[in-house]
Structure formats: structure tokens, C-alpha cells
Amino acid sequence: MTKNNLFEELSALITESRNPDSYEIDVMDTKDIVRLFNSEDKKVSLAVEKEIPYIAQAVEIITEAFKKGGRLIYVGAGTSGRLGVLDAAECPPTFGVETGMVIGRIAGGYKALSVAVEGYEDYPKNGVKDIVDLNVSDKDVVCGIAASRRTPYVIGALAEAKRRGAKTITVVCNPREHLQYDVDVAICPVPGPEVIMGSTRLKSATAQKMVLNMLTSISMIKIGKVYENMMIDLQLNNKKLVERSKRIIMLAADVNYDRAAKCLDLANGHVKTAIFIALTDTTPAESKKFIDDNEGFLKKALNAWRETK
Image (cartoon, rainbow, N blue to C red):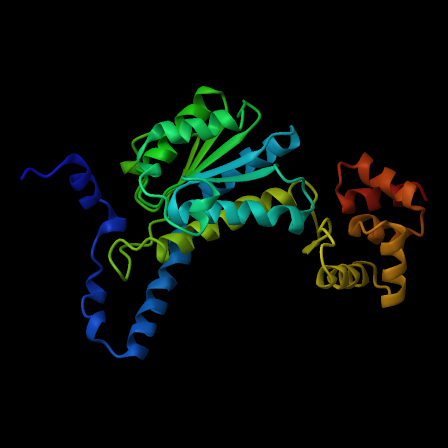
């Protein structure tokens, strides 16, 4: 039987290679296997470090899109798709952004988050359909996540996004020079062969998660969602987040618990406004105006207020 093209393509991928250090894991002592996994994981951060210039370029593109009312849309299959959906889901509660500003799409739909949806990722047209359904425009950024760099669903989505004028980013775990499609920024951490051959839920997924953490978190910092190193637009969705918010106000404004709670109440649960009130003793309306006039950046708003004194 003749080997087909897909077989040859997979055989050439680093993510599908055998790791020479783990040939004997099936007979190794448990502690030694754990030590091996840990040793391999240490390579991930170094691989991501090499991609810092490209990650920074992607952050600038995403930040610019957010400022213009655009969206960040992740597309991926399997573990890669789940990571995108996870990162998107955590943005509203963490940074107080509207649901839909960061979107995750996984091949096979949300059912694929918990069970495998066989074959859906094999067709570029399915990626095209998701981009069409989202009505992607030139205001948006589409980020394709694919450890192998060859997932047809992702390639189809990126091609349709580019056709519509959207900026495109890809996060893959094979060398940049092997990329076979055009994107605005390619982020390519290569942590090497997995401990278990081809199981890209391991090092590759860790590398992708690290990159996605930076893409959204740093973009949110650059649109005013963080003061010093504290999240100040978080949503008060549960008791833990209410108490976390009070602590943030206490730390940012150097006030006691009762004052923080009172300011949070005056600000109707908006931490950023509560900090401004606590620091300036202005009314909620005055505080909100200073913040709005300074594009949501608390430090800029406080400096503007001080200039009026």
C-alpha cells in the first residue's frame, strides 16, 4: 500500500516525533516518569521566550482592534480549540469586558469541549462557516491555534478571515519556516517532541496556553483594565470576587475594609470607580467622568484629577 500525503505530512512534524528521552517510560519507576515529565515541561518556557517579538506584535494588533471596537476570535480543534474557548470565557469575569469581545470557536462546536467530534476538523469549509457565522470583518483579529500547524479547520478559518480583511495570527508548535499559509503574525514556540509521541495536550498545549495568557492579559493591560498589577474591572459574580474587590480597593487606595466596602457600594460594584472615589473623595459621577475622559486608564484619570487641584 502506498503511503498517502497526510501520513507523510504528519511524519515530518516535530509534534509527531518520538522523544528519545522517553523510550522506556512504560517500564520506568513512577517517580522517574514524573521527573521526566517535569524536565520536559521546563523546555516550554524557553521555547515561548524565543517567540517574544512575535507575541508582542500580536498584542499590538489585538490592542488596536479592541480600541476600534473589534474582536479577538480564537479558532482551533481538540485541545487547541478548548484552550481558545477557555481563554475567551475567562476574559469577561477577569477584565469586565462584554461577552463577545473575545470569542472561542472549536471545531465541532461546544459539544467538542467534552467529547471528540470526529472528522469535523478535517474540512476547511467548516472553519470558513464559523467565520461567516460570526460575520468577521476588517475590525476583527482571528487567531488560529494548531499545534501541528496543518489543521484544515483552522486553515480554512484563517483564509476566510484574511479574505474579509481581518488581521490573522497563528499559534503553532512547529518551526515557522514550515508554515504553509499566510498570516500577519506567526507565533511558533517549539518545545520539541512530546513525552508520549503525538500527545499535543502536553508540552504543546502548555506552550499555547502560555501564549494565549499573554495575548489577552497584556492587551487588557494596554486598554486600561489593570491598575499597577491589579485587575480593576473584574465582575462581582460571586462572594469571593466581592471580597477580592474590597481587598484591591484597600491596597490601591490604602484604606480600611469598611471604607473600601462603602466606596464599592457608592460605585455600584465597579472597582475602578471605587478606587477613584477612595483616593479623591469625589462623587461617583465625577469619578466616572474622569475615568471616561481618560479612556478607562485609572492612573491617567488620577493624574488628570490632580492637575485640577
